[in-house]
Image 1 (tube, rainbow, N blue to C red):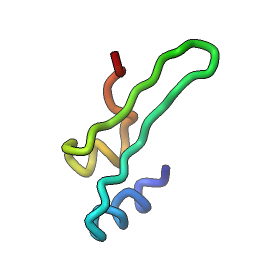
Image 2: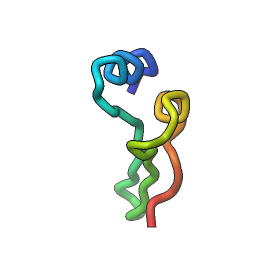
Image 3: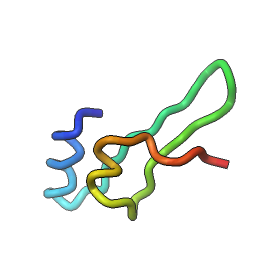
Image 4: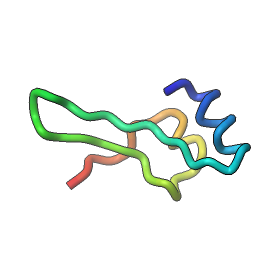
Amino acid sequence: MPAELVARADRAGIAAFRCYGSTERPTMSSARFGDPLVKRQFTDGKGAT
């Protein structure tokens, strides 16, 4: 997701964030709703357990 789209959503009161998942192996990583804007814009967050 483009960083500017995450920033625009944030300004509109929407907590958008990036995430990543793999079909080859059942793993994923995701930012969280409460993460700072810069983390939601530029990282895929922590691995989900």
